[in-house]
Image (cartoon, rainbow, N blue to C red; front, side, top):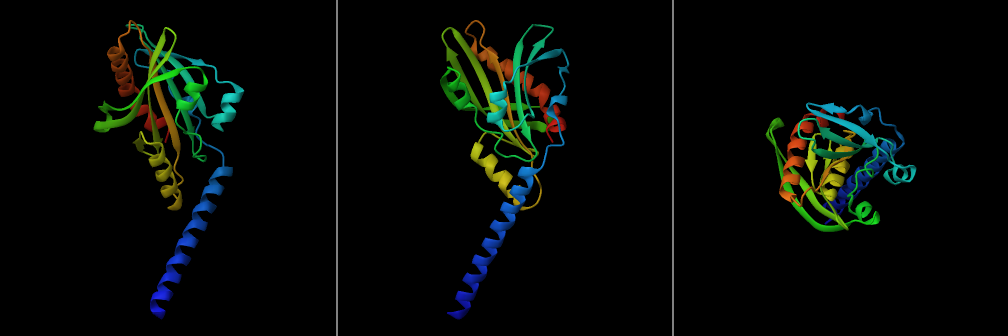
Length: 213
């Protein structure tokens, strides 16, 4: 009986020590600054060129980081337009949160919120993503988003948080990012819009590993 009590006490002490170390690592990271600036992400890729769109001061405050951008990429061949939104931090796991609240807050209606996959040639990946169909009056848009933790992609916000916590506990100092790729629906052709987004994602995926390490 005494041995069982000692074992239970040892387990409790181990868990408590693990929790303390985890929180110490987390708060240490929280006060550190990013050394990676994702604004260096290529503004031109292949036949695509881009312009930066404005992010307001209030939006930066909500994000809790200025390591973010929104760009409109245009294909010089067929004039296809794709929006790329990236938020990144090496130290703050709260920056990468689901965008649904921001969409509804801006007056958009989420008509569809489903899971979808994006096959990528690079590293033979299959990105698990969330697909949103957004609408406001006569305007409609398709948006795909997912999270990046270190070298891992996931569509699940809570899995992202668990991966960050686990890596932090092991002292790996993981980065976290939200990747959102969207496009306006032209001619009510939702399938073509989704296909264009997936093609563009194929193009930028290698750059995500380079510029969002």
